[in-house]
Length: 443
Image 1: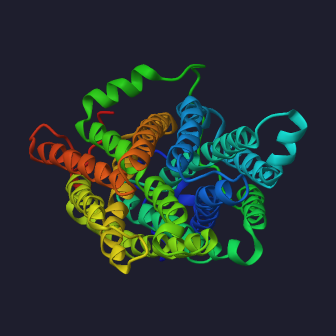
Image 2: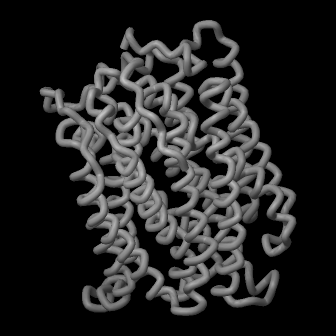
């Protein structure tokens, strides 16, 4: 990935610190992005296998329990993510990132002791695991939204799509390396040791963030409360921002939904469909999801260039259409162990790359520098609502109607949002679309 030249003009020219950035600052950001994605993905991918092998959770309610744990973590995140964005405007991004890594790493190292803690406290080990997962997720909430905001701090509008594409590339790299490599480890070293490995990644992330990241924020907010009025007026004024928030509602949960339900499908139907062990099934699922990550890895730089060329909103339209088709086509798959599953997974990966990258790019474009963290906090809050909604509905659909139905539901929602995005693109009142047409002077 080439370093992106920083220009000292454009709508973000007020941030004079951008011109002082060196290439290694961007490279440090990319490294931290990869580490946080490795941790978050490992925890999510290990969950179905951990519940099955370590805690003995049965197939009958596997979909509901796995989805419920994830939904509860998102509900807790929902309580904090918006306010943490505001806090980052006041004190900076890096302190929150460092403390988040520490919290996530320590709780991941403690997770395998949940049966012992449950026995001491007289509490079901599953309850202890719920608590530990909430704390790990809360650590991630301290990290990831601030990483995204820091990416906006590091860029100006004209070069933002390309740097965000580089960040997205490292996100996909982290996801891919987990499913293609680290999810092969439980069969070799066990689930517990693999969970500990995730914890060590998080602790390494805390040290690297403290040493390598550079604070760009210049705190100017004197109000001691969240700037609800400013953010609300911005949302009312900018139709593109409303579309980006709706896209966050669906897109943020896509990888969570695919990773969780596809892994659960493989693990809990292994003995019915292929007569194989849960560890072998998890390994096979890791290869499929790893392929998905590789597709995102390959296509996300293309999305960055496409977004810079045709504009944010047309790129969102295309991404939603491709993603919707991919999810809907999962309904044609009867056996996840069949290699036919690679076709819809590939389509999902291409669409997902655009659905993750472009809405966030548009939100950063339209967010004034002094409340950028707050706007991204609302953006991520909407994303949390989406994750909770789709996981809860998906878990019920998985158990009641079958393992492909959560994917079908996601496809229908994406296609419906695609239809809305078309109306936004065709509406002459939609506001800025092309990157060269963005005018933030009125904000």
